[in-house]
Amino acid sequence: MLVSGAGSNLQALLDAGDQPGFSAAVVAVGADRPGIPALDRSASAGIPSFVVPVADFDDRAAWDRALTDAVSAYRPDLVVLAGFMKIVGTEFLRCFPAQVVNTHPALLPAFPGAHPVRDTLAYGAKVSGVTVHLVDAGVDTGPVIAQATVDVRPGDTEQALHERIKRVERALLVDTVDRMVRLGYSVNGREVVLG
Image (cartoon, rainbow, N blue to C red; front, side, top):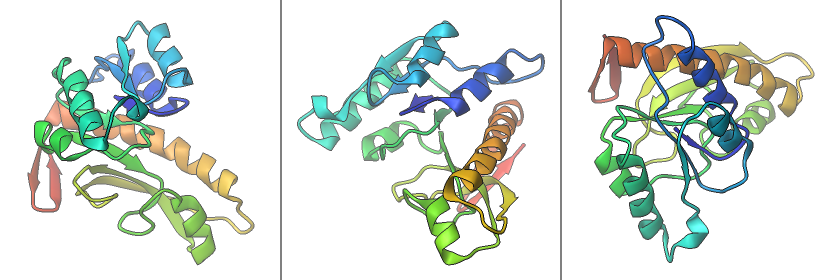
């Protein structure tokens, strides 16, 4: 898993891993910056971790190669971006074709980018939600694996709506990763089929 912050999605997957019948296991946690709570969660669970800060490299391509090498060392079946706030590069995606999974707090293709909850409210949408998708070279443009809706309530603030989305996001991510590992999946153009 790759993380940048608190690690609530990481914790959801760690907790699920303790349950009988869950098919996936977190083998390592990588971060783009040190000192974040997600790394504490990893340490508490006894999961190896590593940090690859962008600032340590001359350019993004060098960072991408270093991140690719660090993740490759663990030979993951899936790479889950759990609140990872950096865009992975072409080398990374070439090394992990159709294996990089991300969550987004909106129903893609609506409201891509860094502020989807704010954009949802500004637009006046009545329904929001979460998307679990495969990562491609674009920003939030990869094939959709799963989605779940969250109603926008009258008077919602960005924080209130985002908290409701996060609860749904954790459950959907856990279920989707479990199904991808347990059932397998295939990708045909923009269609991702589980099982």
